[in-house]
Image 1: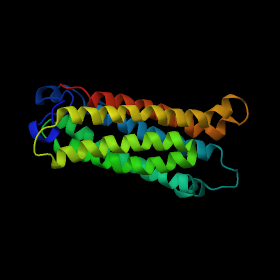
Image 2: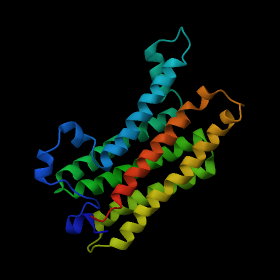
Image 3: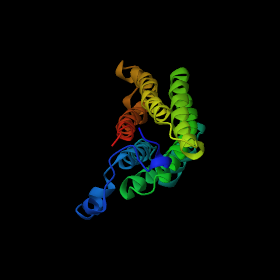
Image 4: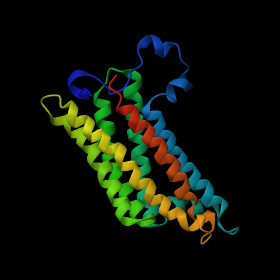
Length: 221
């Protein structure tokens, strides 16, 4: 994989000016790793809000429920912070993919994702299995921040290290999915109502979308 900052490669196929003119704005918005990242991010936020509103007591106002969901508990706050940062990083990836001429945006997307990964790690610890959540969070943080630092500070291209770090990001998804799966397991066994683990189920889907985007960033063309 070529270095993002040294030779202008984005690590995946960029859209040239002609192809951009031939696709609709909606299709352009839904194209590339940034779109997949933010599809997962928006899905996580929207599904979480929907589930919270649906399961809220009849006397609870919508504003109160939304507040509780977003920042009403430590795990909710950390998850909301991580999602906000991931949405911002997804937009960086999207703009880099669309322009094909601004490789610094990829590095900034990596850096912001790395910071978001720290917040997500805390949220996963509070929501599920601590060991697996920490393992996935550390791998994700290392991979994202590592690729960003290479792009920012390396005087020479380091394609092998860059690819290794991106593979670390790919590997980070597995323990996180397992940690969330362990959270869902009691509901599968009938020990908990499904409503209590619905957020974890949605997060598994989101992690699969993020994994897809990770794989797109691995592409050498």
